[in-house]
Length: 221
Image (cartoon, rainbow, N blue to C red; front, top):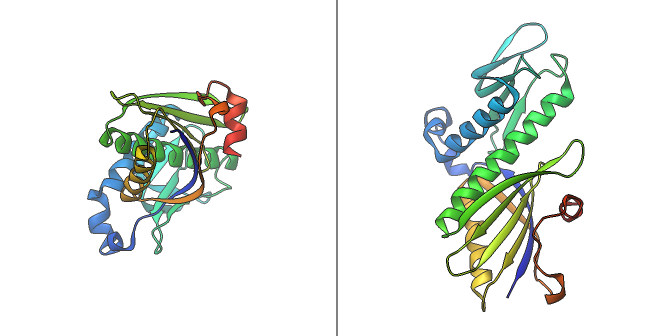
């Protein structure tokens, strides 16, 4: 049996982790993933990590972590709100706001990709990743996972929190078990998952190999 699922995701710390946040967050698994995501985006854009960003008047604002790039040198700060949501802070007058927004979405997308790779590895998948441009301004990350037993999953990770999953090669209800296990594992990585659709794939649909960039764009909506 094969199965297709669509999720919307958001990085959100559970309330239990908000106790003594400044003392506890820096050493939490979610902060490790966030730092790795920020490091990758910083490398891609050229820049440094810090713990503060600067506004247009030169005032410094301290944050948990901040990204300063060649595209937005005054920096983008990251904090966690009282409800656990990840907050990006920057002065839109301090540089190109479109570049700042792009960096924010790339950090979210990279966080989600790292978390997915860890979750899928725990479920026994051998993994490959690649990137595909679906438009001049949007890129998706495609994760392909295969088990030694033949079951597999292809996942398109959008920039705006959207996930499209295609589980293939399963027998019986084991596909549903992996889909549920992946969701729970993502939630343990501080990713809030909203299930938009889960359905069995019709035989005539074949394997969604994500080989066509326009197909990915349509699937992610």
